[in-house]
Length: 170
Image 1 (cartoon, rainbow, N blue to C red):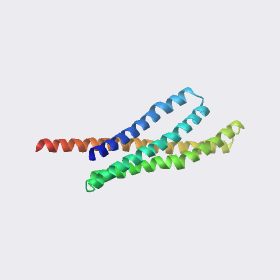
Image 2: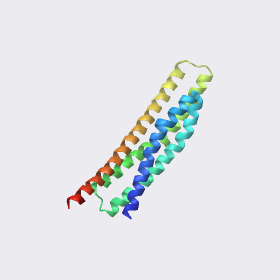
Image 3: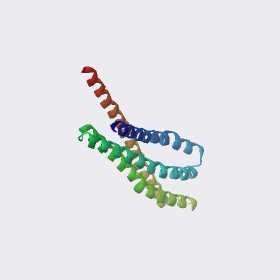
Image 4: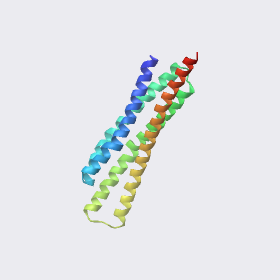
């Protein structure tokens, strides 16, 4: 059973990190390089809705697997740390998906309306600043998810390496 739980944990975590890399470094840059800004923004809004929902799904599966491993193993510290870090990643994904994204989409539509009306005044500049701020928040949280995910994968590999070395010593 532990083997299956470890496999599920690593698969969900690895897929989550892979999705972050794919969307952040391939999909988004390609879309913005090949489509006009408004169209690219619309496409990426659709992608990000599913992307963050998928991230939350991967996170819930990873969290369940690591908590079950901890429960079965007497709550060892390394598994509790892993669960806490998965929770941080989940909180980041949930915050972006359910708080930042809806606000960003609303502000973006206001910016587009102001641009369509040729409103280059203070309101348009303020809205653009608000949109940029929300975008930067989402990028920072997405980057944090990526770094924590890489750290969790490293922690799992390190733990496995330590166990192999301990077995060789005996």
